[in-house]
Length: 142
Image 1 (cartoon, one colour):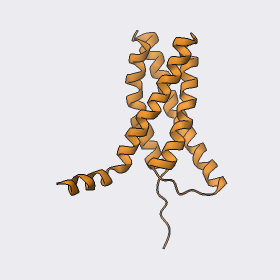
Image 2: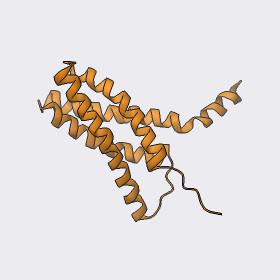
Image 3: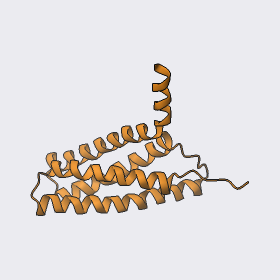
């Protein structure tokens, strides 16, 4: 009984870790947003941008080290990987900003409701980018 469960956990380890660290990244994003917007009364777009930057740095570190187990060791390779990560996050960040404007300014949703809805899409988009573009396993020629 335990063996099949362990096998399933191993089989889906990457996805499980991605969801875990994705939740942690979302927590970083929400905490930064809340502190700036609620405590310091910053504009929601400024708060969202700053929260995005902090969460991207956190996500890169955790995705590289714990989720996708990047084997990149050279400085040049790590910089290339980081720039690829940030570039893909800019795309999902654009989705984030656009969705926040639409949900808050046009639809009239509460900002936290808008962030929850938006973050579901962002997690999916970012996983696809990370898996297929940024941290894809390199195939070595024979």
